[in-house]
Length: 450
Image (cartoon, rainbow, N blue to C red; front, side, top):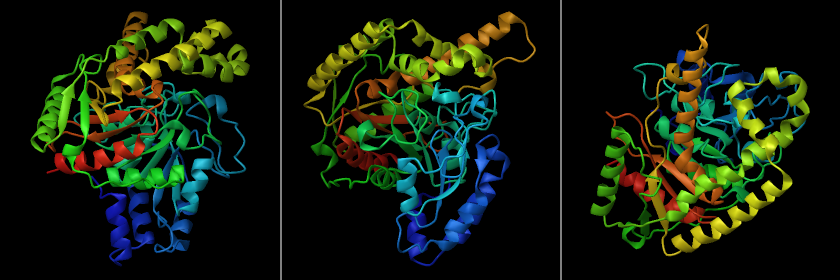
């Protein structure tokens, strides 16, 4: 694992390296075979210019490399959201608001990263531009997680210090967990969505993947234009919850082992961890009977293209978008009302706790071959692959999507040992508990790395 942003900034300030040297290293990483299918567009020359012209003492990001998911506008570039449908999209005349904040902080944008088409999958498969392979498990090509697939691999391989992306149902935390990285989803309202291609205007959050919690804090402070209120409270001062309801179901052996060991480590360090029943989580399945925000809102956005250009979509993405076609205005309003009531009940159930702990996802990254669209095979095999894909997708989204429905905040951080496949521990709570979650995650990360 390349060193994190914080350590690199220290080396810059101490004169042990400079932005030009770091940019050369990141470009070399971006051009390596490990980054195959990671970038849909590179901007190496522009990044080098930024690195040369940035005085490291003046700006927080000091001319270091940042990658941008292909649904955020960068001035002079086209946003295609991982789709050939937008191959002829005009170049952006200005940065997305989040990108502008990073640029002002000294970010050098090294390229646009690949993603699940229109961000509508937690698996990371893209049939148009290829699928980047998981950077942490190399026994065979495994899924990167999505939808911010390229963002994760750019960070894991050293091609970027920050992978900027979006999280609608776990699209930052899932690839972070599967690649042994840190993914922080802030309370959605804290970071502006202006200049992004939407999946769900209700659930979308612009956020990022990093190599450490301290990097996540710095990145969040830039994206949200706010300072995190730091706390030196000991771990024993936090009251933490775990819940077997939904969150612990179907864990594979690797995830169960790493998760239980992490809880044991935290308890030994003095953490107050209480198992609670949270039956409200079981109600999430009910929302599927009402419809879902991503289907309804993406169908509305895509409707101008669906009649004449549906053949250009990834069929699996198209199928999920089309679920929104049958939702009426009444269905949508009932969904809004149901969510509002659910959030109120969840907040009440969790009000005495500082955070909840859970596995980020229930299993490690499966092989790409198990879920990628089949080529030149019979219909039965193709159908089996589709069924496997949707099963994996649902499992990956299950835990993290609960936080999006809660309008909450969450961070996934690695909890595996160096000889184990990556497993993510998710620390989460409701809206505007970001600082508490980040402070707690800082302590947990230090304990788990010992």
